Length: 268
Image (cartoon, rainbow, N blue to C red; front, side):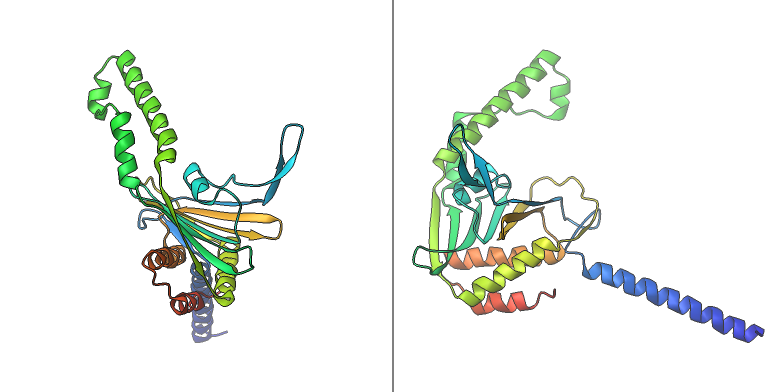
């Protein structure tokens, strides 16, 4: 092989190597639904697959729906059973909301939207009733350890009392809408695929505030859930569509054609 042939051969090898790396990185980027790290606001996620029904009881045993993936606030919304499709939106400093899709007792497909209508009023009641002792990190370290521990213990007790009482004060509003089987099935299929094939990359940084979203679905005997703090990428697109459904439902402006179009833009 002469010198020119060797150069051409090396060029071909380099070209194959570059194209191979490009297509691998492109394929990986296509499979990522959520990103976290210094160049992204995306936070942590928790993905769970569990049995949908569990057995509990003392002497008398009963089949119960598994609610381990639901926090206390979400149980107020969807604590009686796990629906085929559920979405929950929980911001740090605002009212929570969510929806689920299910069949009513007549077999009609229903979109049920829930939201807290008195969040700020309830927060004020418990804040006034159970006040916290405010401090800065600098002022706390300058205090005697006994007083540091006393302040922390006081705030811990007050916070626990707030959490316990505010659940009783929340007014959860419920709106129900009849929806088409086509829309319900498409959203269910997308939710199953999205949770089942969810991929994330990066290292989540510590993020204060923001919001959490939870996607949940039932597949055969299992309940699948995916909780994401500050979703990015495809996860943000999915969460944004679900939040839009809630907003439109509260305004009585549901638009199935719009949601079906958005669902069609997701590629499996």
